Length: 148
View 1 (cartoon, one colour):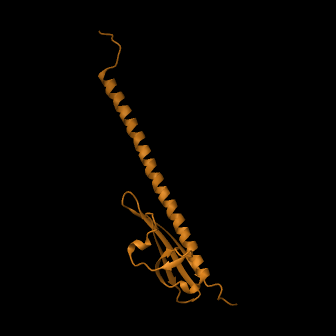
View 2 (cartoon, one colour):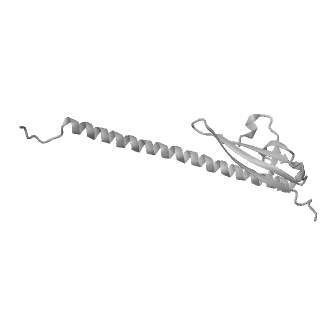
View 3 (cartoon, one colour):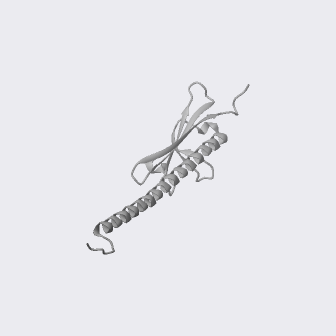
């Protein structure tokens, strides 16, 4: 019998396989971590744009209740104050220099003229091509015109 020390071919193949498996697992974890970070960043940004839209609608309500006409709008702040603007192009809904699209929808109440509903929807396309969105709905009241 031969009593030689060293690696056999089986041990070498097994070591290469374990190293490859470990390297693949580590690379997958790093890639998944990057994708998860991007998804979470997109979601947080969309929530911030949604909140900004809600605050803009409150501002519009406080400025003049009659500006809240039923319909679908985008928000314009170019004059220094928030206004609901009607879109002439689908690109009007895109928040400037971003990949996010914000639509504000105003709904009138048939039973109470001093109450309206509003929803702010922010959507974006993820890297996989899937469309994601966040929506916040609110009730608005013309509290200045309500009398006891």
